[in-house]
Length: 436
Image 1 (spheres, one colour):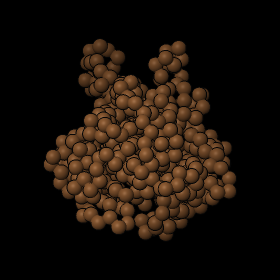
Image 2 (cartoon, one colour):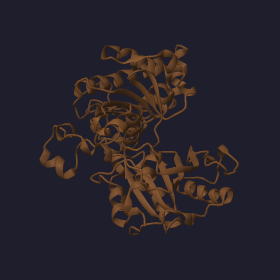
Image 3 (cartoon, rainbow, N blue to C red):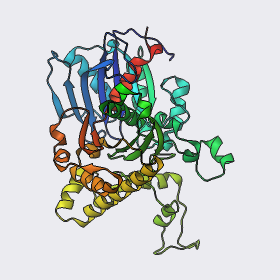
Image 4 (cartoon, rainbow, N blue to C red):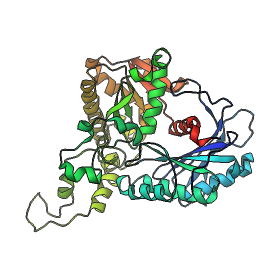
């Protein structure tokens, strides 16, 4: 496939593939293309919001028309037994889109794909055989996401052959991290050819948050985004932190892969790198004797650290909301998971505060947990009073009752409802080379 500019009358589809989910948003371009990166005017309008959850096991489907005047039955977590994987889930959506709203596939001219790991790609790329293969080679570095995204890309090329499939990379936002921060203390003659360095992730989310928060702080209208300094916590089943200095990523908690940094639902986060060898030990205690030891393949090690760790390993559930509830009931395992998560978050908040020399416009919570976990936000911010962050308990508990993308919950403390699909569609709309 080669890049083909499209008519501005066409639609943009944004796809966000998780390990067992697929978020789908369909956008229409505004008549004017005059929007600029710092503008409060969005160049696209959301018309359809859809998602598939629990893919590969009792899949469910949600679908809603957002554009005023469009009459369609709203579906919420409806069983979708036909869906067995991401590819069949996407086809299921396209068929429903035609039946429910009458939108033909030919009306979709660009498909934006969130790709977690982009390697040395730092700008969006149209999917071709070579770019597809390059992303495929990076799947081992993001085993929970890249593979799922590639399966959707593959079916897109078949089901929407007339449309451009465009890859947007979570790693791109962190291209500005200084070399002394992105490098590891290993032989650079080996590291550089192999690309062994910190990449960082959740970049589409951080790009959206930066723009939204900067606008909220009035920096986008009075001065450029490049004056904004933030500590952002993207907390979800995958969790990370980011220090933004003068509107650019300065440091982030994830590294070569998303396994580094904060723990997540099934990820261990940063650990002593030799722990994995002792963890898989057959002996009852640590030993360096060949007796009782066994080889641990990299695939098994990655599986343990990515899929068999995190708060699921501590509590038996990936649902952090359930952990908070169990904690309130005195569950010791839930308390451990909660306290451990808070501790690791504070590690990064403190470090990033120093790296930014204390010049921080706001501490921002985002992601599923960051946007919903009242108790977690309270404990974290209360621990950060010494840094000048002060929580308003009433505003913190009332976040769900306040509309808008950014909500103030205290002195220099914000909640931002991030939107990775919108960020992709927005970037696509503003890229002149994609349009006639």
